[in-house]
Amino acid sequence: MHIGTVDSFKARKKADVLVVPFWKEKAHAIPAVEVKALHAHYEAPISAGDFQGREGETCLLYVKDQEEPRFLLLGLGGQDDVTVERLRRAFSSVTKVCQKHKLREVNVLTPQYKALSSEDLMKGVVEGLLLPNYTYTNSKRHSLKNNEPVNVEKITLVGVGKAESQMAEKFATIVDAVYMARDLVNGNADDVTPQHIEAVARGLEKSHKNVTATIFDKQRIKKEGMGLLLAVNRGSSRDPAFVIVEYKGNPKSKEKIVLVGKGITFDTGGLNLKPTGSMETMREDMAGAAAVLATVHAVASLELKVNVTAVVPSTENSIDALSYKPGDVYVGYSGKSVEIGNTDAEGRLVLADALAYCVDKLNPTYIVSIATLTGAIEITLGNEASGLFTTHDALADLLAVSGSETGERVWRLPMYEEYKENLKSDIADIKSTGGRPASSINAATFLQEFVGDKPWVHLDIAGTAFLKDAKRYLPKHATGVGVRLLVSLVEKL
Ligand code: BES
Ligand code: ZN
Ligand code: ZN
Image 1 (cartoon, helix red, strand yellow):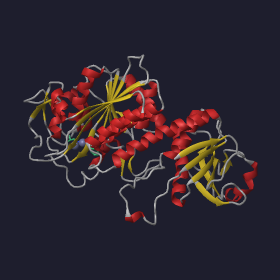
Image 2 (cartoon, helix red, strand yellow):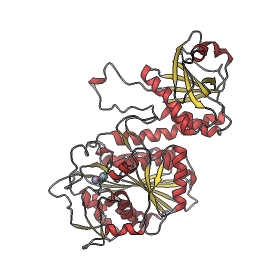
Image 3 (cartoon, helix red, strand yellow):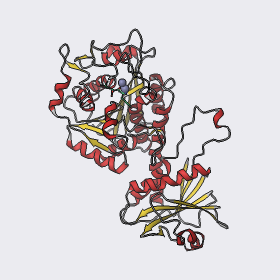
Image 4 (cartoon, helix red, strand yellow):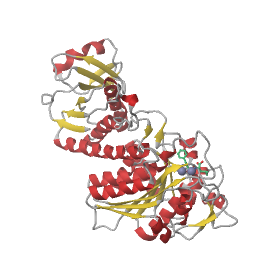
């Protein structure tokens, strides 16, 4: 995908379609960009009332004597209460129409609008156009022969100056990282293995200066005493991997944000085997890992002046005669003993080792864990927000702002001291599960045990990482959630 700009209407080149945006005023559409010469072409559907400018409304026209054979009228909704999110939703309609009609090259008359900063305007337009411009079809073969899905290949923003042009490029770079996360999550679990995650980390080291990858193999993981990661790995025929990717964009500063992502490349549940209906999408269980690796990719591509480290504990949670067992006790990096309540609560175990290691060795200023951790968070919030857990109010507030700015919303749940009682064990220091009530909070409370007093926030993305159907500007399947949110957080910290 190429996103370019030209500064005037006259300077635009041939394309398949010209997007002409409109505001909705009472029951009438008014152009968001005045180009007198175009009036005659789009007057008819407007005066007939067939196109009113509602948010995301479109009307495809065929025109003569223009650089484009088609105009696509696009409604932006009312002018008074525009937000970045509304622009995202409106502009996503353009991409969906283009995909349907197989239009590859698009000129977009870019609206001018005083009430939003030009950065917000660019963000809404570019993210709205690009976030839905993705289809995962790598495994489709014969069935695609006559009907290949088409994505937009070239977008030119028309009437845009140099500063805005750079902003557009920045947002396109971030969306590229979102695609990277989606590809990792959508890929076959038998391809996206812990060893593949290792290779991705090495690739990041290779393609960015200031990025280094450190990888612990099974032997080193044993030596480090990561007994919880090893316990989860016991049912798998593939080795685990512990991956650390460091980006040093500000070597002078001691500040460092460590992002820990759950990297379970397939979750069968282990001996507490998942039933049919619950296992089929469990290749998504490394979406946290995908988000933190892609965030480092974005931050390094943008050369932000910050230090960010991604940490990924990775293994399959598979099933075998050697599988770790419910009721048994295992000791991990922290030295605390853990009674296994349920082998399907494996994410918190591998994260516990990663968090304890990170606190001990990486000297983080802030820690963020991100994981498809509990089915219960989807019951709580559906697909509309990720769960947020922390005792650090300032971090919670920052993430809430990042959430509303990016549209990757978060909703904070409580971490009252009393929840710790749910995790009491008769035979070990702590139990990994606390029963069905407050299941998502129990999981976060378990993680809290391993972060000491470091500023830490946990994001549960089990409801937002993967969609059954396309929704607004998000495609079907992997959403790439977390990348835009974390990039925004890193910029704020
Ligand atoms: N990977 C799952 C959580 C999940 C569910 C992710 C649905 C995405 C969609 C996690 O490892 C898990 O199975 N959690 C259990 C915990 C329970 C056994 C305490 C759950 O949520 O049921
Ligand atoms: Zn599980
Ligand atoms: Zn899991």
